[in-house]
Image 1 (tube, rainbow, N blue to C red):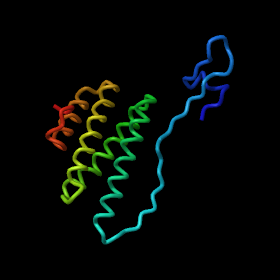
Image 2: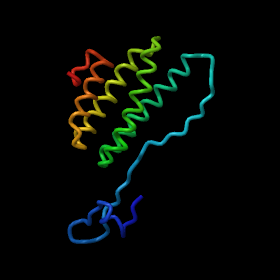
Image 3: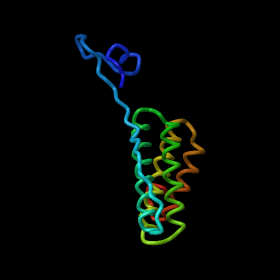
Length: 138
């Protein structure tokens, strides 16, 4: 939370005619998960997909706020989780491939916004490898 007195310094702006500046919030989508190791691979895979989705949402929130380095870290983390799920096979492999490709597409965008065009191209190639039918990665 940014206090009203420091909002202008943090990117907030005063409304026309003066008054209290807008407040700016950043949500990093931090989630605490109670993880119970299980012999049931299905429930562990669903939990891992939930973590990957959370990293993707967190990356999107950071990218919206201009925190490209943090967004890139979150997107890449989500893509790595998805790659592990996809390589293991099973009923969630296709969903993990699509989510992993989305994470890599977004990581490509974060790289481009940071001016790292080679990194953006590399992320796009990895998105295509994660989901060969992904039109955004082509």
